[in-house]
Length: 324
Image 1 (spheres, rainbow, N blue to C red):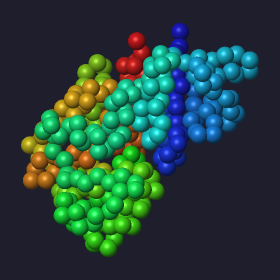
Image 2 (cartoon, rainbow, N blue to C red):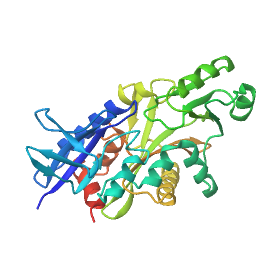
Image 3 (spheres, rainbow, N blue to C red):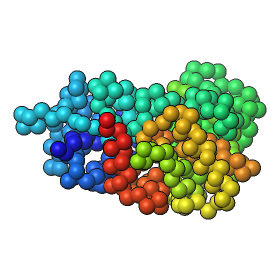
């Protein structure tokens, strides 16, 4: 009997448009002869099932069910394609856990931890995972620009602590530009992280649970046409994403080892895509994404294809791994 699969997409953050694209690629890629597939849009003002004709049917939040033409529809599994809140920060994971509905991303705690860049890096540092020098600021704190620059130097990156797709991030070269960058970050989140600039090769590493084993995918080297890997570089083609990365075997082995170690230290499940910059040929972790982009142009699907894994196999495996 075919399983009913809900593909959730949208979300409450600035990333909702990217999430809708990801979710639709998942919907089109999965085998509809094996699964009954349903697109579920999750927004602050509505949760709805959207059929192929664009008709919307409200989702009952008490049990995550949908009534279609008088027939109640329940789901056997949820494919999570929501970037940002509430799909990547633990809220949807906790909700489905309470309802005992399997879902394809990591558990609630891991999602909340990795979504909080500051907390995630703090947890990993005692294990020897190298990171950039950092300085933390919360909304309402007194901004001591001299102390910030003394700690992280210039140039530096000012980032919203809980945001993705490079929203709320600025590269700062001069002290007089620091306050504006902080304001930009606070527009996305009430916590920010300010990091030292690491001048080196940037790579992205996908790690997934595939056929019961932790699998590190081929590495992608990021060569941005812009000053850094910003929104335009990620989504508007203003970068080169080279898979497999043109780095030495030594560097490849180092970053693959660290990426797998991070996945296992954090007791992850499902998809992860972590970002690193090499400094003195040592990989320094920037962040961990647990609901990476799923479009054909996105990095993790590119890596899967380089590993000989089709999008159908990649997404179908995530569902099979999550089912009891």
